[in-house]
Image 1: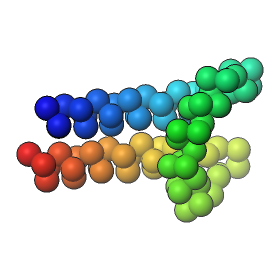
Image 2 (image 1 turned 60 degrees about the horizontal axis):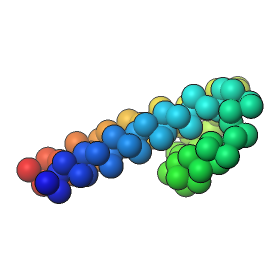
Image 3 (image 1 turned 90 degrees about the vertical axis):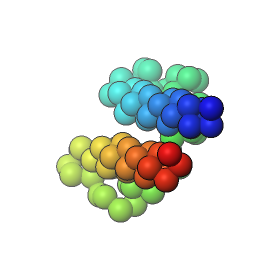
Length: 82
């Protein structure tokens, strides 16, 4: 049961990250109240990677690394807990 809940949490957070990234492409949507809530949930995590990986021109590669790191963390936790 605990692993199932943990998997749901990882999935929800991954979806929030995806919404944050895709939402940033649409200026009207990125300024919505919903995106403000999503940003408050995801920006602290993304900012860790933004400090490490500088943007390449206008392209921010840190979300790709953040997705990858989240997947590795999930894999490590599930390997330990199962």
